[in-house]
Length: 181
Image (cartoon, rainbow, N blue to C red; front, side, top):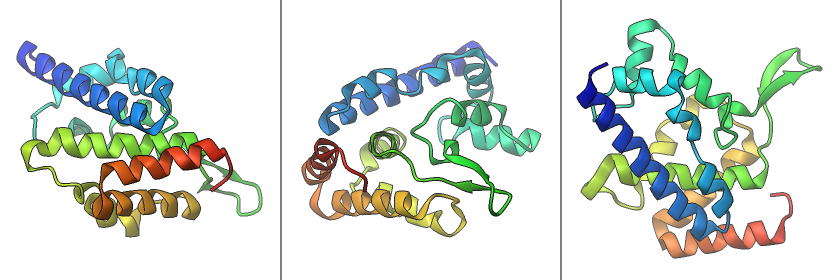
């Protein structure tokens, strides 16, 4: 890890966190936004992120290519409930790890995170359909609870077609109702 890549990585993850905070405020979950992705500053995640930082791809992908796994990602997904990968558990009937339905507040944060990531990594090329396109690209291989996937896809479609105000408005409506989705 060199100093320049460490600074660049720090700036990228900090810009991303700030964008997520803005989105979480729009969704009505500011507290979650304030605590979003703090684990990225931990040595386990930050050192690997800086070591594999190139600015155009996820450091986790490069670490995975190099080592066959990403220690940073395993650490991250195990501590951040807004990642659907966190929400797997042993099913006593099937005796396998299976996705479980995420609580609404974490689906909301996941939506904010995905939109922010698209904005940060696409920069001036960002369009509001990009988060949906990215989601759809990985749909066939993703292991996520069907109801969670359906809600996230619905939010991303609202964003793509009607824009941010409509998507965040719908999300605030769901959160105010405080009911299951």
